[in-house]
Length: 281
Image 1 (cartoon, one colour):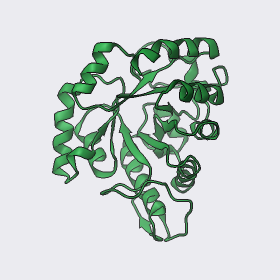
Image 2 (image 1 turned 90 degrees about the vertical axis):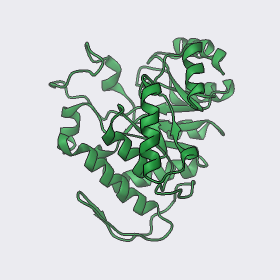
Image 3 (image 1 turned 90 degrees about the horizontal axis):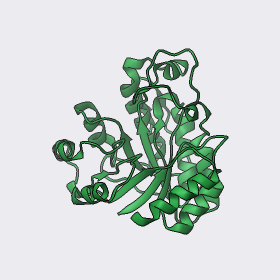
């Protein structure tokens, strides 16, 4: 099983360059970074896991800039977002960022897609909350048009793009309905999420990895009904606090990669946790 990590990198934590070098040297498979552009101070949206919102949410660095630094000092480390809030981006700009990072890293990028939980943050980006999933789906389709081998126009509900010359292209070739880098969609199990995964993704990024025994057969059914290759479905439990029994259970379910959670801390603490996680490599 491939072991990757995720961390809220901030202006107060270990740097992406130092972390990326240590991860590759120790044999970890990848580095995934979350995204929050800002956290409005006056908000009504509760923290999903309860209690006060941790400090790091409002201090998170831009994942694409940080992953660009990580790519520059590594040669094989996987690079991913967990997750990119696609609805909060201009899709033409985002398509360029993603394709450039994937191209310059030699195809090492994984696009983790999410729909968000913070209503106020999304609203500041002009996102109507009830539209966020449809908007994200529409923007993914527009980006696929820009990533296509030939100039391809797209006219959607929320945006459009003319047939255009748009380079560089993502390294990975189209597979089934998916164009672009490896694409995983995050979120809680449910019919809407599973429909999105089967339509335009390579798999699922379940946060915490709970309930997979019950959820995976349902997702596999939706995937098969969409005509997707059963062997191609990827499920990557994300932000996991590891235990030997937990990782063994994932392996029994066919999981080939897991993303472990690192603390949003300084160099000494983070490297100490990596030492502890090394037993799972």
